[in-house]
Length: 285
Image 1 (cartoon, rainbow, N blue to C red):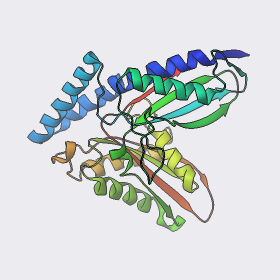
Image 2: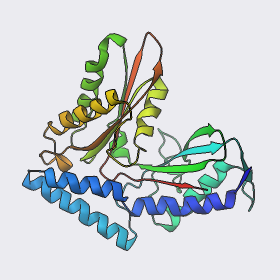
Image 3: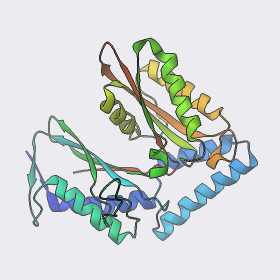
């Protein structure tokens, strides 16, 4: 039985949300540098240079990579043989994650981007509530992954309920159509997460979860979906939107596709767009 202290989780979260917002990870930087070498547009090349310079300054000066420091989204993988030690006045894992987020966003001078009501729009002032997706696993695993999800990219995402007859062609056309409609709004070059199957809500979760895949640009282990990812990346990059919508060869850094069983009468598809500031980090205890 593994024992996890909630105070340790809180402190790890506090550091995690700051580091993720200050430092692009090496796998992301590697893809950005590779795509910069493939960009042919002079304006696009300048944008890539600015992205890399921005990344350097943010890392060195401990500043947000983007003014939109995102909704705090967490994926928690917790083993059935893990026990939580409710120390330091923390009553639950959710409370520990929330408190770590509050502290991290405050200490890191990160923008608070959450409103307490979707219509009345009053800011909560601490970037909570957080969004947590729970996965119960066998054994003693305890892993938390954080995604900072900006509004500009999230707003360009979409879900569509297809009839099965739409087939592979319908799925791929929808993904490309969604990226095309987004244009410059999600701050390209983008990362495109795709969820195929499940049901209405689970397809969207699949699409978001696909963004967690490491390293960025790695392929689905199923050759069928790996080929789809390659084909979609090429089609999206042929749209000509280019870095920051300035025109060019590179509109997307990567496409990740995940699938799940679904009902015989439906084929849900979700596309979750992520900006070039792809902030994903994890820790394990």
